Length: 420
Image (cartoon, rainbow, N blue to C red):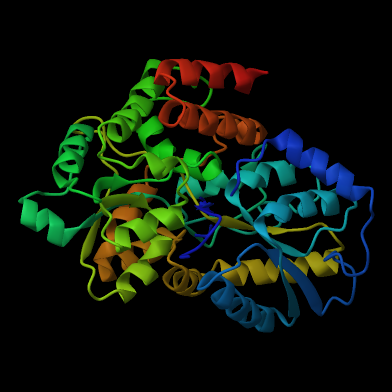
């Protein structure tokens, strides 16, 4: 979300299914009963070979990551054995390995999952190991912390912004919207025939929650009280957009990749999406688009977007292996390496200076870079309780947009579910 689930098909933000923590742990315990074998991805073996695991299943992430891993492995004097695991199996597998104390030397995990894994005691605290977070955005550092210690550090992150078709806006005599009222007015004016003014993902998983959070947080709501007046205001905005026909009723089934497909096909004049879509969008020379920050409730407000992307972690093993793994992570977090990774993967470098250089050289990334400063780590408010609350919020969005429930009632039900 995170890209979420599929890349340009953002990492998958960065995105991930909103599986409640209790279910993930239960699945992990069930898998643990099967034990772990020599091929389980654990950290045994010679110290000149390290194991690594991630869930990237599509280009450019799954093609670029092995290259940068090989380069940093060579600098650290190790060979890195790479393993890709389907997203739905990823956290259950890691939690199983954590229970057996056989975590891989290196794991690249979605940042909202970090606290669950750190709570097992299976990760090396990177701050105590001497890895510095100096120069990184504070929100990015926070996304990798658990109980005051940094257990994960992101080489790059992603977020959400508003894409708009410049040709359609020019024809309609419009400027990109900055407020919710302007967004509603523009979306209504740009809706014609099969084309909707706006597309977003309201699918009933973390992916839908991830897309809703910029509106939810910017309205002043927080995840500890899902049914606050501010939360109702945000969900009412989405319901009004769908109810008026400015957004398709199908948003409740669309992933972020589906939303991108709709935008590229000319079926949406605007869309909420992440920077991981840029390589695909830029490849279509007939499509002319711009990117601006997510509109806000009123003038002067700043968008608060969820911090998407993954963090590098190091599994506990023995001092020699941990030292090698830490050397690889230090390389991966270097300014040059993180800038290269971010450019290739459609991410924003975690390092402020590298991010500023990216924004200066790529105007379509500037909106995403501008939002990082006010972005929020999804676990900031709730810690390990985030997945359960995220799913409750996703269910409320579905109930309001597809089930005919009022935003207030849907969010009240979500609050009750989150507390049970």
